[in-house]
Image 1 (cartoon, rainbow, N blue to C red):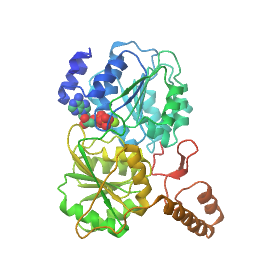
Image 2: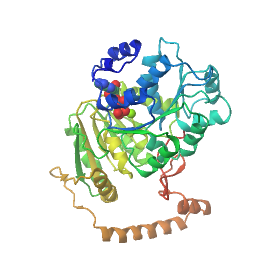
Image 3: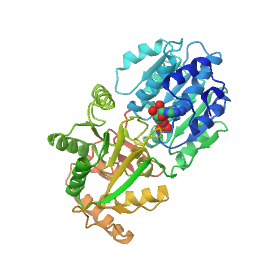
Image 4: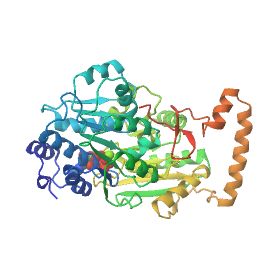
Length: 446
Ligand code: ADP
Ligand code: MG
């Protein structure tokens, strides 16, 4: 379907033409008319399939065509789980709002609070934000949402995973009127937690699902390699760095500590790398992402902080140095390549510690993967058997308990009750899923 068949305003069509797009993607084809007709939406489609425009265009159209409900309140709020993604969405939005009467602002955690108060006082029509910081401003009465027309939750499932449901509900309640429309987008929206949340927030939502989360992404070539231990992973990584023909690469690790260690090692080998982790300040984070998106470095090493939404067109390879604990993050990580019709490679290392994540990923994607190997770097490890694993889990927890006993009382309390991995110093403990483990992740502080 061509963009000019949606009945969009001429100014929007010329902006799209300027971007060089003619045909709408499948998700755009379905979501744009549904959103324009006023429906609440739960919309999912694979990574890199153009979900951002699928919500930005109806939002812009609504603002151009409808009268505001209130003079001063924002009309559209777009929330994302990470600051980097919010920045990217904001940049796309600006392509439509610049040169119009519509003001848009970006409100992120980690940036100057008072500057944001001043910006909010200018009564922007659009706010793009991370939920924690926006909820803070709302609590303090720096803006009101009585006139909000559209609440858009990009990567909604990840915001819930990160423990932002309270803030999302607060924002929702502040804008709880009849004319409000809500749109939820992600590549992975089909789990119970999202459904419960959607029932509460959305009004008779229309479900649009282009494929399932487990539908094979044909543009991403997935390869899995068994590994024995850390040094083995390291050797494999060095092999791929030397032999793969990559433009830019993102390497995902389990923890910030690993990110830093790897980055240091690869830099010492003279490779052009940069590391992004949540404990850097926002201007450092901005600098890193700006530099990498401009191609100043070839390799970005990071955690799940960068798994969602980021659209970096030269990323030809994703390497999972460690597998993510949550299967849906695998889909998002590898989705940093193979975007908008281009091809990508996703290489994953599966060591003993990754084994159960690997099995969960297979179950989630409803696929059985075969392992490839590199001559001279073949693993002895062949996988774990369920029974043995149960024993080894017990053993492991016994070892952990022992180690924990030696720690200071406060640390022991924290390790036993709150943190899954006490050695991984993240930002804050978050509650994941109903009855799930509380664990550290490299998450957003909002
Ligand atoms: P998603 O949110 O589904 O992961 P994005 O919205 O980030 O995907 O879009 C991925 C890439 O596709 C972006 O670079 C975007 O500019 C591009 N894109 C969006 N819509 C179209 C289209 N209709 N035709 C071609 N490319 C598009
Ligand atoms: Mg997206």
